[in-house]
Image (cartoon, rainbow, N blue to C red; front, top):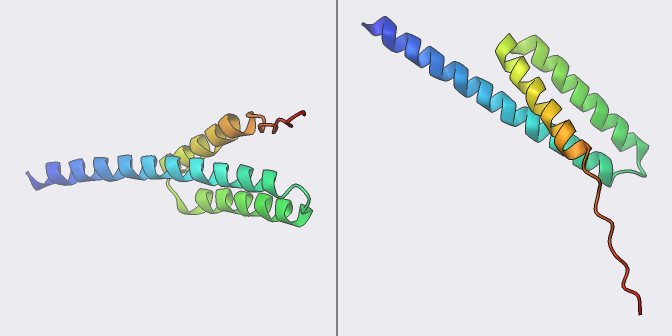
Length: 96
């Protein structure tokens, strides 16, 4: 009987890990895109953001189980598609 409880707890822990890495990938992708747009003049910031995001993906490959890595990749890819394709709003100038 205790093995059924452990299996159910393992299932819940795997689901929470997947959901957490999905949300983390989404947040990391949004943060990189937002900072990349705000720091358009500073190329050093853009390089640091790219290397940090790439390093985060490499660390995820090394430390996470394949399911967690896939969830991180899906979240980061969704962030790049959703917020990367969106054009920034242009402020309208008031004409007198």
